[in-house]
Image 1: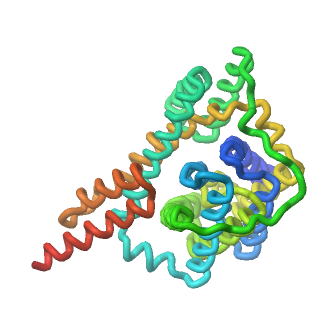
Image 2 (image 1 turned 60 degrees about the vertical axis):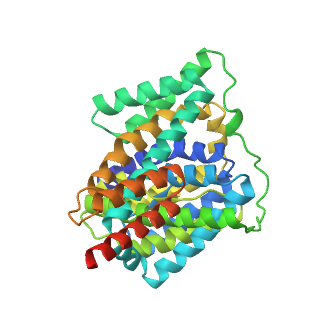
Image 3 (image 1 turned 30 degrees about the vertical axis):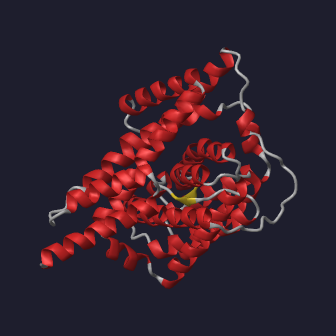
Length: 357
C-alpha cells in the first residue's frame, strides 16, 4: 500500500533528524518549542502542496551555535534571520538575490560551510577522542561501503559510538539535557554580533533553500517553489526561537521519493513534532554523547557539501570565476557565510570593472 511506503519514508527522515536534533540540544536550543516550527511546516506543506519539508539541519544549527556566545544571542540570530527570510519569501525576492549573487558565489559559500562543518567535527573529536574517532571511522565505512546513504551513516555511526562510550564507562549525555519546564517567551536582543550572525544565517539559508529545495523537488518530479519554502521555514524559525527553540530548515528529504511526497513530508513533520512535544528527544540524549555526531558532520561537510558545491563554483567560464569562488570558500570557512558572500561580490565587481576597461 502506498500509505505504508509514505510512512516508511517519513520514519526514515525522522531517524535522520533525531541526531541533528540532539546536536541542537547540545548547543542549548530547547526541544519542545521547536515542535511549533515542525507544526508550521506541516500545515504549510499541506496547504501549499509543497514537496519540500523542513527539519533539523546540521549546517544552520552549527552556524548559530558557534557564532552566538550565549543562548540569547543564538536565539536572537535565529529569530531575526527567520523574520528576514519570511519577508523575502513573501515578497518573492529569493530568485532576485540569487541571480544578483550568481551561482559561483552561492555555491562557493555553501562549499565554505562544508569546511565549517568539518572543523566542528574535529573540535568534537578533540573533546572526546574515543567517541569522536569511532564515530568518524564508522561514518566513513558506512557511507563509502553501503551506498553513500546519509541516513544509514548518521544512525549507525551514532549507535556504534554511543555503545563505545557506554562500554568505556563514560558519563554520557551531560551536554544533551535540558530543562523541560513551561514555555517562556524569549525577548530578542540586538548587537553587532547578533546582526552579523543573522546575516550569516540568511546567506546560508538562501543557499540551502535553493540547493536542498531544488534537489528535493527533483527527486519528487515536481518544481519546488523556493519562495514558499523560504516563507514557511522563516516563519518556523521565528516562532520556534521566540520560545527558546532551534532552527528548522530545508533538507534533502527522502520523503520526496515516496508515492505521495507531500503526504510523506507532512507525516514526517507531524511525527517529529510529536516526539518533541512529549519530551522524548532529551531523554534519548541521555544515552548519546555529544561527540557521536562528529562522523556524520565530517561526511556531510567534507565529503558531500564541499566537493559538490565547489565543483559548481569552479565550473564557470567567466574571467576571474575561479578566484571569486576560491576566495568566497576560504572567507566563508574562516569567518562566516555573510562575510564570505560579501568578499565574493566585491571581487566579482572588481573583475567586472576590469573587463569593462
